[in-house]
Image 1 (cartoon, rainbow, N blue to C red):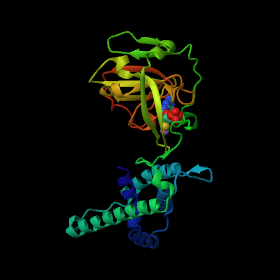
Image 2 (image 1 turned 180 degrees about the vertical axis):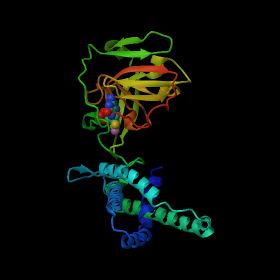
Image 3 (image 1 turned 135 degrees about the vertical axis):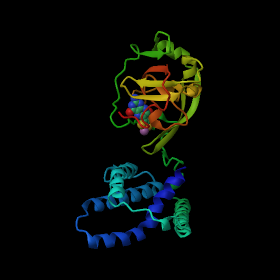
Image 4 (image 1 turned 120 degrees about the vertical axis):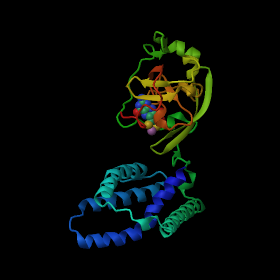
Length: 301
Ligand SMILES: Nc1nc2c(c(=O)[nH]1)N[C@H]1C(S)=C(S)[C@@H](COP(=O)(O)O)O[C@H]1N2
Ligand SMILES: [Mo]
């Protein structure tokens, strides 16, 4: 679906000439337009950074990661866009629903789609790094070499110090006492080896071989409710309980114990999900009646 994101972005560019006519008219009529100017700049920065990331590859410009600039500018644009829509509200007229408007919309979408296809072809023909990105927009980094894989935290978390000898995994099941499993006992249970891709929203991915224990082994098979996975630091994600067989509590990557940075002694491996689901330093897993979607779409801490 990454092409939809790309086509929508280029759609903004396609509409820019028309919008600039409206903007010029507006500039003549009104004096104060600082916020509108900031909005325009933020949108332009996000577009340029997005295109640079998708074509030239993962880059740092003046110490800033270009993808981070793309995302930050886009996030900043959201409240400005809402303000713009509210303050410059257009009344929908009957003619807005005409055939002519529909044809125009199709023309804009078609032009944006063509521009996207052209940009993609040019990127690959020119042998630019952009051609090597995954469908998520991420670039490969450190596959098969965990030590080369970045250590990444979601905004505020920090790598904790955990003594494996003192570590205990807590397993909660409805109507039962919390089970406590020592690090040694957990190691004895880690019999599943699985290759999976960790793909961070920060723009990199790596495929590694993980070893661990499947969550259904710990929790039993269940088809309702959710599984909450919580770290020592409080970072929590909730999964549909039927995903248990695909989720791995890993102790090893590439045959060696997980480093503290990569979530040691125990982390979650969630194949097919973005990196922020892969809870590191897991302390607690529990089966609960709450549905998996009763959580923020992104971690809040
Ligand atoms: N406890 C905890 N787990 C976490 C995070 C975090 O901030 N805290 N960050 C997540 C994110 S955003 C990613 S991409 C992966 C990164 O794993 P790595 O540092 O082993 O590469 O860990 C995930 N697990
Ligand atoms: Mo991430």
